[in-house]
Image (cartoon, rainbow, N blue to C red; front, side):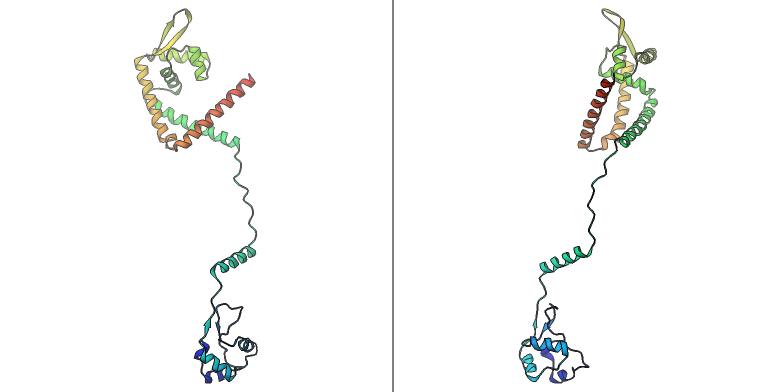
Length: 243
Protein backbone atom coordinates (compact mmCIF):
# COMPACT_ATOMS: atom_id res chain seq x y z
CA UNK A 1 0.00 0.00 0.00
CA UNK A 2 1.38 3.43 -0.93
CA UNK A 3 1.72 6.02 1.81
CA UNK A 4 0.08 8.80 -0.26
CA UNK A 5 -3.26 6.94 -0.33
CA UNK A 6 -3.58 6.59 3.46
CA UNK A 7 -6.15 8.76 5.20
CA UNK A 8 -5.83 10.17 8.68
CA UNK A 9 -8.26 7.56 9.98
CA UNK A 10 -6.14 4.91 8.42
CA UNK A 11 -3.07 6.18 10.22
CA UNK A 12 -4.93 6.19 13.52
CA UNK A 13 -5.97 2.58 13.07
CA UNK A 14 -2.40 1.42 12.58
CA UNK A 15 -1.04 1.51 16.10
CA UNK A 16 0.67 -1.26 17.93
CA UNK A 17 -1.99 -3.78 16.96
CA UNK A 18 -2.23 -2.77 13.29
CA UNK A 19 0.04 -3.73 10.41
CA UNK A 20 2.59 -1.12 9.43
CA UNK A 21 2.95 -0.17 5.76
CA UNK A 22 6.06 -1.27 3.88
CA UNK A 23 8.65 1.43 4.57
CA UNK A 24 11.93 2.17 2.91
CA UNK A 25 15.01 0.38 4.17
CA UNK A 26 18.49 0.25 2.59
CA UNK A 27 18.44 -3.51 3.11
CA UNK A 28 15.29 -3.82 0.95
CA UNK A 29 16.09 -2.33 -2.49
CA UNK A 30 12.58 -2.88 -3.86
CA UNK A 31 10.60 -1.31 -1.01
CA UNK A 32 8.53 1.88 -1.33
CA UNK A 33 10.10 4.89 0.35
CA UNK A 34 7.91 7.39 2.23
CA UNK A 35 9.01 10.66 0.67
CA UNK A 36 10.59 13.19 3.02
CA UNK A 37 10.59 11.01 6.13
CA UNK A 38 13.37 8.45 6.09
CA UNK A 39 14.21 9.05 9.70
CA UNK A 40 10.62 8.77 10.85
CA UNK A 41 10.26 5.61 8.80
CA UNK A 42 13.28 4.02 10.45
CA UNK A 43 12.01 4.96 13.92
CA UNK A 44 8.51 3.75 13.15
CA UNK A 45 9.83 0.42 11.86
CA UNK A 46 11.58 -0.15 15.19
CA UNK A 47 9.04 1.18 17.69
CA UNK A 48 5.82 1.21 15.60
CA UNK A 49 5.24 4.81 16.75
CA UNK A 50 2.35 6.65 15.12
CA UNK A 51 3.48 9.40 12.71
CA UNK A 52 2.67 12.98 13.61
CA UNK A 53 0.47 15.50 11.71
CA UNK A 54 3.42 17.13 9.96
CA UNK A 55 4.55 13.79 8.65
CA UNK A 56 1.10 13.06 7.27
CA UNK A 57 0.98 16.44 5.53
CA UNK A 58 4.32 15.84 3.84
CA UNK A 59 3.25 12.38 2.71
CA UNK A 60 0.01 13.71 1.18
CA UNK A 61 1.86 16.51 -0.62
CA UNK A 62 4.61 14.35 -2.17
CA UNK A 63 4.07 11.23 -4.27
CA UNK A 64 5.84 8.07 -3.16
CA UNK A 65 9.19 7.27 -4.71
CA UNK A 66 10.01 3.72 -5.76
CA UNK A 67 13.67 2.89 -5.35
CA UNK A 68 15.01 0.83 -8.22
CA UNK A 69 16.48 -2.56 -7.56
CA UNK A 70 20.15 -3.42 -7.77
CA UNK A 71 21.50 -3.44 -11.36
CA UNK A 72 21.31 -6.77 -13.17
CA UNK A 73 25.07 -6.98 -13.68
CA UNK A 74 25.70 -6.47 -9.97
CA UNK A 75 23.02 -9.01 -9.04
CA UNK A 76 24.58 -11.58 -11.37
CA UNK A 77 27.99 -11.04 -9.77
CA UNK A 78 26.51 -11.48 -6.30
CA UNK A 79 24.57 -14.60 -7.33
CA UNK A 80 27.67 -16.12 -8.92
CA UNK A 81 29.72 -15.33 -5.81
CA UNK A 82 27.12 -16.89 -3.53
CA UNK A 83 26.81 -19.96 -5.74
CA UNK A 84 30.56 -20.54 -5.87
CA UNK A 85 30.90 -20.05 -2.12
CA UNK A 86 28.05 -22.42 -1.28
CA UNK A 87 28.90 -25.32 -3.57
CA UNK A 88 31.89 -27.63 -2.90
CA UNK A 89 35.03 -27.25 -4.94
CA UNK A 90 34.88 -29.30 -8.13
CA UNK A 91 37.63 -31.84 -8.65
CA UNK A 92 40.04 -31.20 -11.47
CA UNK A 93 39.44 -33.25 -14.62
CA UNK A 94 42.28 -35.79 -14.83
CA UNK A 95 41.84 -35.98 -18.61
CA UNK A 96 41.33 -39.03 -20.80
CA UNK A 97 42.53 -42.36 -19.49
CA UNK A 98 45.71 -43.57 -21.23
CA UNK A 99 45.09 -46.33 -23.77
CA UNK A 100 46.66 -49.71 -23.08
CA UNK A 101 48.60 -50.93 -26.18
CA UNK A 102 47.95 -54.55 -25.22
CA UNK A 103 44.20 -53.95 -25.28
CA UNK A 104 44.51 -52.37 -28.74
CA UNK A 105 46.56 -55.37 -29.86
CA UNK A 106 43.90 -57.87 -28.77
CA UNK A 107 41.21 -55.83 -30.49
CA UNK A 108 43.26 -55.82 -33.68
CA UNK A 109 43.70 -59.60 -33.53
CA UNK A 110 39.97 -60.16 -33.03
CA UNK A 111 39.16 -57.74 -35.85
CA UNK A 112 41.59 -59.56 -38.15
CA UNK A 113 39.90 -62.88 -37.42
CA UNK A 114 36.45 -61.43 -38.04
CA UNK A 115 37.49 -59.83 -41.33
CA UNK A 116 39.32 -62.96 -42.49
CA UNK A 117 36.27 -65.12 -41.81
CA UNK A 118 33.95 -62.73 -43.66
CA UNK A 119 36.21 -62.42 -46.71
CA UNK A 120 36.89 -66.17 -46.74
CA UNK A 121 33.15 -66.87 -46.92
CA UNK A 122 32.78 -64.59 -49.95
CA UNK A 123 35.80 -66.13 -51.70
CA UNK A 124 34.46 -69.65 -51.20
CA UNK A 125 31.36 -68.65 -53.14
CA UNK A 126 33.52 -68.17 -56.25
CA UNK A 127 35.58 -71.32 -55.64
CA UNK A 128 38.73 -69.86 -54.02
CA UNK A 129 40.40 -70.15 -50.65
CA UNK A 130 42.21 -67.26 -49.01
CA UNK A 131 45.73 -68.67 -49.75
CA UNK A 132 44.78 -69.28 -53.40
CA UNK A 133 43.43 -65.76 -53.72
CA UNK A 134 46.61 -64.37 -52.15
CA UNK A 135 48.66 -66.03 -54.88
CA UNK A 136 46.39 -64.91 -57.72
CA UNK A 137 46.08 -61.33 -56.47
CA UNK A 138 49.86 -61.09 -55.98
CA UNK A 139 50.46 -62.29 -59.53
CA UNK A 140 48.02 -59.67 -60.86
CA UNK A 141 50.29 -57.02 -59.37
CA UNK A 142 53.48 -58.53 -60.75
CA UNK A 143 53.65 -61.55 -63.02
CA UNK A 144 56.82 -63.52 -63.66
CA UNK A 145 57.75 -64.01 -59.99
CA UNK A 146 59.59 -67.11 -58.93
CA UNK A 147 58.29 -69.32 -56.16
CA UNK A 148 60.91 -67.96 -53.77
CA UNK A 149 59.99 -64.34 -54.54
CA UNK A 150 56.31 -65.15 -54.18
CA UNK A 151 56.91 -66.81 -50.80
CA UNK A 152 58.77 -63.72 -49.59
CA UNK A 153 55.87 -61.48 -50.61
CA UNK A 154 53.33 -63.71 -48.85
CA UNK A 155 55.50 -64.17 -45.72
CA UNK A 156 55.37 -67.96 -46.01
CA UNK A 157 57.95 -70.65 -46.71
CA UNK A 158 58.88 -71.81 -50.19
CA UNK A 159 57.60 -75.31 -49.40
CA UNK A 160 54.11 -74.00 -48.64
CA UNK A 161 54.01 -72.05 -51.89
CA UNK A 162 55.22 -75.02 -53.92
CA UNK A 163 52.23 -77.22 -53.06
CA UNK A 164 49.82 -74.32 -53.55
CA UNK A 165 51.24 -73.54 -56.98
CA UNK A 166 50.97 -77.19 -58.00
CA UNK A 167 47.23 -77.19 -57.27
CA UNK A 168 46.69 -73.90 -59.12
CA UNK A 169 48.59 -75.24 -62.13
CA UNK A 170 46.42 -78.37 -62.14
CA UNK A 171 43.30 -76.17 -61.99
CA UNK A 172 44.50 -74.22 -65.04
CA UNK A 173 44.79 -70.91 -63.18
CA UNK A 174 48.60 -70.53 -63.10
CA UNK A 175 51.34 -71.68 -65.47
CA UNK A 176 55.08 -72.10 -65.02
CA UNK A 177 57.37 -70.67 -67.65
CA UNK A 178 61.05 -71.36 -68.02
CA UNK A 179 63.51 -68.59 -67.25
CA UNK A 180 66.31 -68.29 -69.81
CA UNK A 181 69.63 -69.13 -68.20
CA UNK A 182 68.06 -70.56 -65.03
CA UNK A 183 67.12 -74.23 -65.11
CA UNK A 184 66.17 -74.45 -61.43
CA UNK A 185 63.56 -71.66 -61.26
CA UNK A 186 60.38 -70.91 -63.18
CA UNK A 187 58.42 -67.73 -63.69
CA UNK A 188 54.78 -67.81 -62.58
CA UNK A 189 52.08 -66.32 -64.82
CA UNK A 190 48.30 -66.22 -64.69
CA UNK A 191 46.21 -67.96 -67.31
CA UNK A 192 43.14 -66.17 -68.72
CA UNK A 193 40.95 -68.23 -66.39
CA UNK A 194 43.17 -67.38 -63.42
CA UNK A 195 43.13 -63.68 -64.30
CA UNK A 196 39.32 -63.67 -64.54
CA UNK A 197 38.94 -65.49 -61.21
CA UNK A 198 41.39 -63.12 -59.54
CA UNK A 199 39.34 -60.16 -60.79
CA UNK A 200 36.18 -61.64 -59.26
CA UNK A 201 37.96 -62.12 -55.94
CA UNK A 202 39.24 -58.54 -55.98
CA UNK A 203 35.72 -57.26 -56.69
CA UNK A 204 34.39 -59.24 -53.71
CA UNK A 205 37.03 -57.71 -51.45
CA UNK A 206 36.35 -54.22 -52.78
CA UNK A 207 32.65 -54.63 -51.97
CA UNK A 208 33.42 -55.78 -48.42
CA UNK A 209 35.85 -52.91 -47.84
CA UNK A 210 33.28 -50.41 -49.13
CA UNK A 211 30.73 -51.75 -46.62
CA UNK A 212 33.13 -51.55 -43.67
CA UNK A 213 36.38 -49.57 -43.80
CA UNK A 214 35.17 -47.40 -46.66
CA UNK A 215 32.43 -45.91 -44.49
CA UNK A 216 34.98 -44.05 -42.38
CA UNK A 217 35.84 -40.44 -43.11
CA UNK A 218 38.65 -39.92 -45.65
CA UNK A 219 40.76 -38.15 -43.02
CA UNK A 220 40.36 -41.10 -40.65
CA UNK A 221 41.35 -43.56 -43.37
CA UNK A 222 44.46 -41.51 -44.15
CA UNK A 223 45.38 -41.39 -40.45
CA UNK A 224 44.76 -45.14 -40.14
CA UNK A 225 47.04 -45.86 -43.11
CA UNK A 226 49.77 -43.73 -41.57
CA UNK A 227 49.53 -45.64 -38.29
CA UNK A 228 49.57 -49.00 -40.08
CA UNK A 229 52.71 -48.05 -42.00
CA UNK A 230 54.43 -46.87 -38.83
CA UNK A 231 53.44 -50.09 -37.09
CA UNK A 232 54.77 -52.10 -40.05
CA UNK A 233 58.12 -50.30 -39.90
CA UNK A 234 58.39 -51.01 -36.17
CA UNK A 235 57.63 -54.69 -36.76
CA UNK A 236 60.26 -54.89 -39.49
CA UNK A 237 62.84 -53.20 -37.28
CA UNK A 238 62.05 -55.60 -34.44
CA UNK A 239 62.46 -58.60 -36.75
CA UNK A 240 65.80 -57.25 -37.97
CA UNK A 241 67.07 -56.71 -34.43
CA UNK A 242 66.15 -60.26 -33.42
CA UNK A 243 67.62 -61.95 -36.49
